[in-house]
Image (cartoon, rainbow, N blue to C red; front, side, top):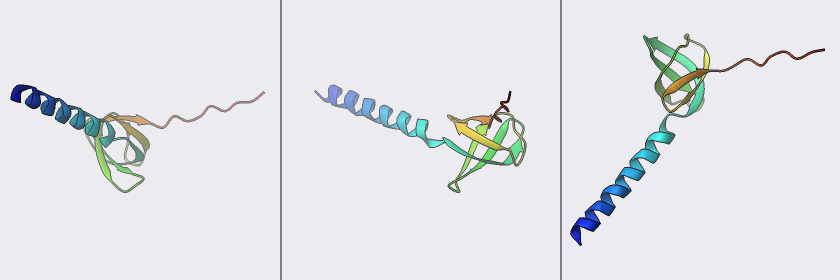
Length: 79
């Protein structure tokens, strides 16, 4: 009985920790500092998040799951 309870508790802790990590670093903001592949981003809500990618200081970027992607510029459409 106690092994089942310990297993259940461990499974719940694992699920809670993976859910917290997946939502932790998703934001949009501007690059504050670059050190090699490690980039520090100041999010629009004022928090700072570190991630990996390629960007310059001052670029507008999006952070999802610790990966940095630059904001893509929309193409100009015309006749």
